[in-house]
Length: 352
Length: 268
Ligand SMILES: Nc1ncnc2c1ncn2[C@@H]1O[C@H](COP(=O)(O)OP(=O)(O)OP(=O)(O)O)[C@@H](O)[C@H]1O
Ligand SMILES: [Mg+2]
Image (cartoon, rainbow over all chains, first blue to last red; front, top):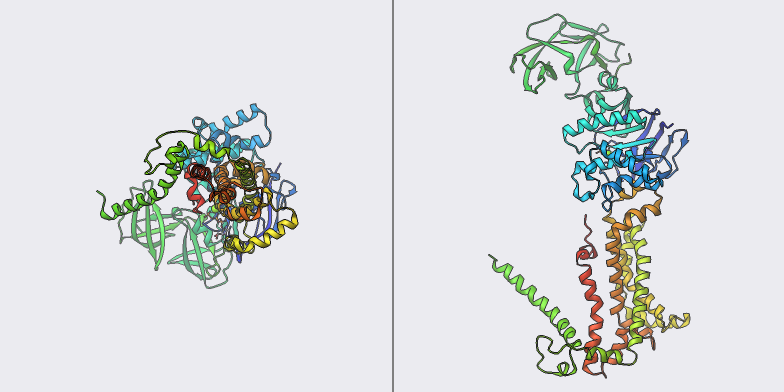
């Protein structure tokens, strides 16, 4: 079967270095999500794997073949493009059947595959339409269906659900996950949406300005970010970072002393803690520190609080019936097992 | 309510349209009238006696048949060469960034800045050497040179309007470059390519200068008419004039939708 391995990929557009040495290994049948801010090079990496763009340095392997110099058609991949790219002169049916027709598949197989893909993407009743008669979300589903229909060994998807409404997206996400697990397709999936990333991925690859910054299981990426970028990028609201003094090998918040995994290089250390990992109390508690409430935002399942501790802003969530108003002081108790420690100068996590 | 300005524009536009349409209308109606109405003065607005007498007379004149045949051959060859040479060049301009692409684009237009009058004599001499003088092929080559800049620029804006991703998807789905072009780009470009082809045909059909200089006996229709016009009767002139404008009219009517593309305003 087919895993994907890219090694030391560098890509220049003119003078701009868009990828600066990306290495990534995707196991056979694994579902990897590529997550990163706009312009960090996700699409470029995908296109290099697909063979639509050539890397200036580095190699691409699919299965046990080095494909760096092969044209796209020889790489046994299918790709869903960010802007759909469905053929305007063909009906939905012919769009989905395109890859199968190129493989000279039998009429029965074409029909079976098209029906399956169309049912899955909920476009069975649109098969005779032309793309101009479809909404953006419908077009996007045609594009995904077209890629699924060829049953590729490797599926590359560039934000395939970005244009669907929240409900449909939720449903498609679950169905895609089920289908791809069933068909055991190795998948590399690009998204901006971290919830999508968390829900779909076996592993998440977080990119920033042309580099891979963390590659791990979703829960580890969430709980143990390797640097402040990952902690800040993933999670909504993002991770809190508090700058604390180091005293005797421990970090100090007020009277609370927290032990560190290793001694930090400087006099200060950065505590990374998720908003939901701060328990809030209106009375002083042991193992807690005081913070002043600035803003209260009711979000439904919980209240989102913006607080300050020694001029450092932080967020916390409390149950929706929590009685609180701006100006009050709360006592926050960090969950001991859920804390990250980072070096404030480099932003990198302290080794555990 | 129309403002004064809008009204003025409409009046001007109407005058302009009349200025173009009236001669065409007169030529067309008189080409299909009988002999007496061709010579009548003042002429009626509407064709009075429909008849094929005038046209029939025209086709009866010696040399006309041959000139029309030559024109057809020359224009068809021009069409073929322009599309076969122009479309690939347009595709390259649209799809690839290469050193000198912009210079190339300007150079293409520059060929139109060369007055044919200067080129004519050396060209005729060369053609005599090559054995192309007084052949439809020779004229077609010159006409291709005239039509090619348009063909290249029009097709390049045509291909620019077809997203590259469409081809790329086709590549990932198993096409090589040629297959992707044939299955995806060509169907989408076809109407525009047809317009380009007809345009080349019309350029050739109406071209008179090169055709006159480079032929002696194998005249094209415009060259033949130019030579015969002064000493031929009125019906001959009307019928000949009509035949000259017909392809252009067909062209305009068939490509109205694509005119914007032809003027180089690609749809993106
Ligand atoms: N053909 C190109 N020529 C020049 N620069 C390019 C080209 N394609 C992409 N870039 C640049 O490369 C960088 C990465 O682009 P890329 O499309 O990979 O980003 P992305 O991570 O997919 O972003 P998004 O999430 O917005 O789709 C961007 O800064 C972009 O401007
Ligand atoms: Mg992108």
